[in-house]
Image 1 (cartoon, one colour):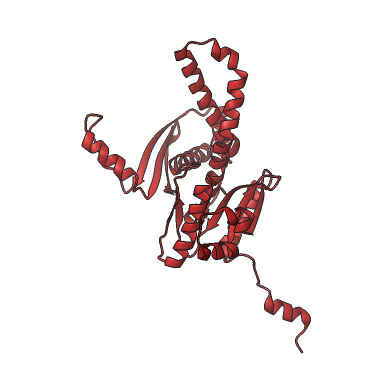
Image 2: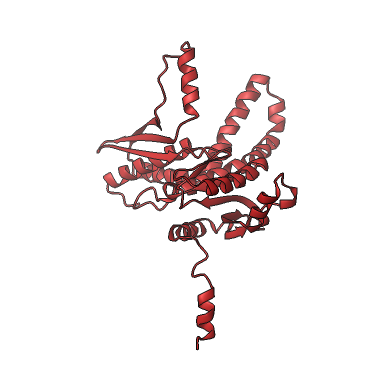
Length: 312
């Protein structure tokens, strides 16, 4: 006779996640971000969107009523902020309101494209990531591209409110300025707010700042140079007068699959060079170019610190 516990175990799934990597990513997100947000795995799509108000047919509605979202990040009052899907089967990723699939699966493509379409129509951050975005930036630095995506998204969301706060505080001073002075002042405020929010929310940018501070405290002088990269490479153009070359470059930019950065850090003990690549997960909230630059700078400064005997 089969025991009740064994009967139950035969009927219950062994794990709520569809695979090891999906579960590992949730552990990472929860451990790194739960101080600020509530993160939920496998929430029904209907917990995020009101199905009745969507412009969908009956077949799409039936699918959405049955489907879940891998990870939903909410504020501490449980208001959804963004969603992330881990595509371990097709190795795909999102770019704006499109799903870029690497391993063909027409049914999966159709379903993920529907989710992205609905999120895009409601200006809601929705990302599809895979192993490249989950992977730690190095064996010693336990941060990933996903952390950069989340940090940039939160920073972008907070930008408007913080900018309005600073403008309100400076209203009298701004009104007393002429048009040129006012424009320059506001541009300075924009830069300050963007940097402040990035350092507050993006853990990759924050770690860059921390290493910079350590190097400064140790009186270690250094200089950095940056070189943007792309795959495929962008065509050259000869300058602003090369209209055709500029058009080709702009068109090619739309088809970039990977954004990269090489960062070279020169110190009195030598030079270190690091390169980082990020798939083109461009969206209204997160920039793969900025993430690639931040990661490459982090790796370069980390290597420079190690070169000088500093343990981070």
